[in-house]
Length: 188
Image (cartoon, rainbow, N blue to C red; front, side):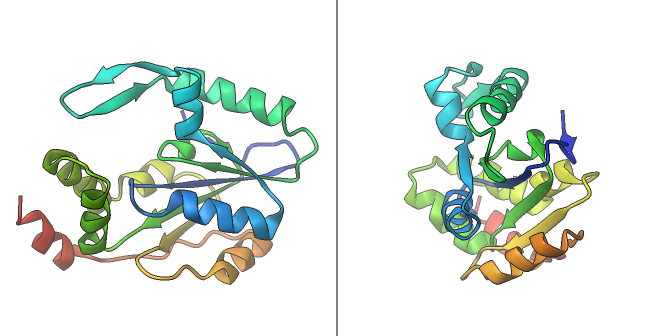
């Protein structure tokens, strides 16, 4: 359901990553620099009931990706027809129409603390740490031309992102945290 290299004459940036990696915060900072509109997928899903059901065991909504994508495309075309820069932010944003994808990654020790502070159950924390370890969002984004893998454990260098966007090139920053994941996942 991936839609890379969306052709509208707009720069559409997808910011994706495991919960707790800083998608919303980065979207807000980047939007200020680029004078961009933000499409928050979580808000859209909740406000418009774009989910097929609820997985009680995993404590999560089952998003109707087809309806979400249709909604987002309509939003881009009708609400933001004159916007040059649009940021789509959320866990599933890499499945939405985009010209650029930024995949956020966070050290598992830090990510675990962030998820616990959100009140996630032990099982949900573990599931998200496993997804981060496997690089699920990055893996699902591969095949797209413009992907940036970005470490958000500490401060994010906005200039790095702005330069990457300006150059339009493909950068995949390899992040190896195997030892950290072994330490964290051993606690479960």
